[in-house]
Length: 399
Image (cartoon, rainbow, N blue to C red; front, side):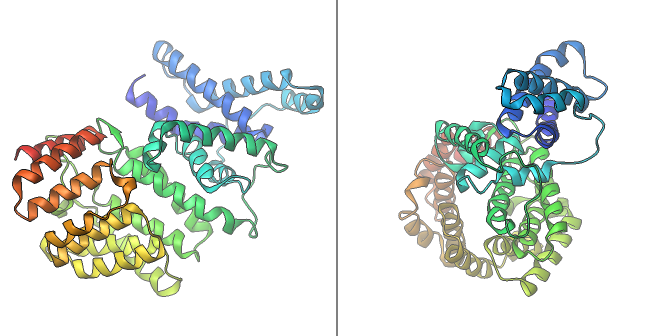
């Protein structure tokens, strides 16, 4: 399967699953039907050519498979089968069910980790391996979470309902939805594996869904904060890869290539939100991104302000990556040796993560310990599954 076809199928997957769940109910069997339709497309389209209406083709195939499943179910489903046969799913609907599907996956019967894993699979189109790398857990763990999540939705009394949550239900699901969108964006902005640094279809989809969420919930500060964070971060994407395909770190980027419109929109949004809403973790991350983006040159970056923001973030939402980023800010304010000392107490969950080795290498390089820095860069290169990051780290080791 070509990369273009894989990208198309990933984009269409939630657009097929949504109408099926809305029409037939039964998330687990509808998801199975969609997966079979995607598999059929991956086998037939390269040989037969792309159909005139790929979305309609997939809905038709998935709908037929779902009807076959209905026919094989017990007698209690006879009435549902009859209705389904009489009124097949329309392939011409312009309704975008992706946001509703997103909230369905964040069903209250599920644990937060299961909500996130299922949504990344069904809405974000990520593979089980990609989700596992985002969570820093084994792939088998994510597979089990997805299986249990589908089973719990099926067993729930409201599992077949396909609707946006009510105002009473919304708070319980919103935190998981925001986390899901955050992870989808991160996978698109820095792919955890493969040849490409970016997977623009994922980051663009995360921004699109977050915009939809913000339009419906404009008073929710963390929704606005997440949208601002995505805009301010994605604005740098045009400068992140050199003409010869190497990753370009933030200090070395040509800031003239940044998307000025996205920077302006994100800065205005986070500035307004911080004045009007209770402060949350996504708003603090957006504020950090805004400080970076406002600096005309890398040496103009206000690292003291960034350190204060990371200290607040670590209080509100402690985590290994937050601590690692705070240590970088500490090193930029107080010197690399202070940062290296704090790295010794880094979260054990990061012990085998390439980011920890890369940060250590950078700080060793700043401290003048060239040989130790080279070894750390080599270790980081061995640990990452992203080929652009690997090439960059190897270039630093040999430089």
